[in-house]
Length: 301
Image (cartoon, rainbow, N blue to C red; front, side):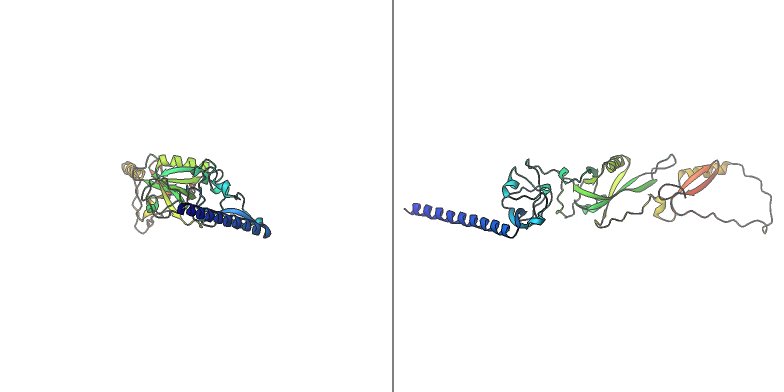
């Protein structure tokens, strides 16, 4: 008798709870129609990349009918069908849109985060080239290439650094693509979002030298005015190129032309030639060597 009474009470409680919830949904829908609102699915708690969508982290909310965003879901059954997952971080109360969740197959792929016409390319990094691990998914970076100066006269220590890409979005570090994960972590691979031409440049640059990331403010859209930096730009002294040493040896071996003595007062004072500022190129014609300035874009001034 006690067990039977408990079952009757439990059934009655379930009936009352279902009636209350059904009545609540009906009242909410009636209120939404009266106020020209629509019921759409929103997140009831923060969702991270790859997190499964469930009835516990989703709910229905009233939204102005004239401002319903494109791709919104109007029932929980449509969202939960097929085991969808979040493709982008979604904050609590934010509408769940079709382009922010996976398809019915439930796969969270990085390709879904790519903009139209863009590609994801992986480049090797370390604790130094990844800004000590402070470059995280969602940040904006510049990509620098350090390589040996081309040419027969350049030695192993003759290096140059160029900025090959600017304002590049960082998609992932190793296999972490969650933009909410802002804790510094050192990775070995960085995945960046670039167009197809920039993807070709990155693949080729990996074969030529070492790539480094320069973290920048995402709001800074001003293009950087930067040219090629060599060892001569690191301080006053610069460096002596091997080709200059060979030219000096050739000049020393050449016969010295005869010069008639002149009074000291008649001889003009020797004036040291002005050293050009910025990057230069050494040109040797026979035994004569000249230094020609090189413009920032590669052309001589």
